[in-house]
Length: 347
Image (cartoon, rainbow, N blue to C red; front, side, top):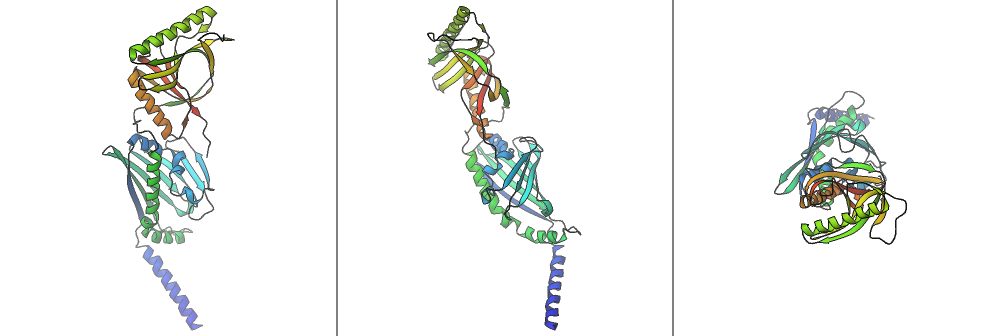
């Protein structure tokens, strides 16, 4: 009995020593890892600020694919939130919420683990030798609350001593996943475009097929010839037609542009023995930008738009739609550029 009491006394003394030592341990823990990614800074920032893409590179998602995820708040903005709930203890439950954004430079989030406390996470980006250096930081405060949380708080102080060793490898694996995902995007800087996602109504069009090869002069001749066909058809059949032409691209390569040159028009039946055809441009969601400039500059904007869609995790459909302010704008002028979006399954 005396031996048992001594053992109990030793355990109590050890517990008191451990608790006392906890007050002397650091009251915060820091984890930090970095990687370079061979993509423009704006692309990587847009990816990091989109919590709906987090699980595509997260180092923890594969541990429990059956975990439940909930998204709320605005998309890729302050207040955007991702919450998770898992039966596995190494995944657990919690949430992360964007609390600050500095375009193309940083994303700050708050991690909330409920009774286990909160942590502050920050992604910082800078350009190094035409690549983007991403630094992933996490800072956790380890207070000692003299309430029902005290036991967890004491344990947290000891875990904090090993936080870098415990979490650092996960950060490294996540950053490697992030780089692999970013490497799938076209290597195009998207810092200076701001596309809009719109729902477009269905539109009736009449069109002719144009296959232009050669220089700008050859394109202009093919364009003018196609417009002449369309206008003659409108007059011949007494149609009501719009004046802003559209180009629906089928193929666009160096030196060749195959497209349907179209005008909005109202009709009931279309004849089958003419080069002018009718089609309905279906209703649906599109991503659109406006551009004013030359044909070459417009192609660069199209490349940026396609890269932006890829980074956002959207899927572009066909055709590429260019709506011109007037008939002379094919080589130089104001154009609305739109790409239809294919439905994407929600997580």
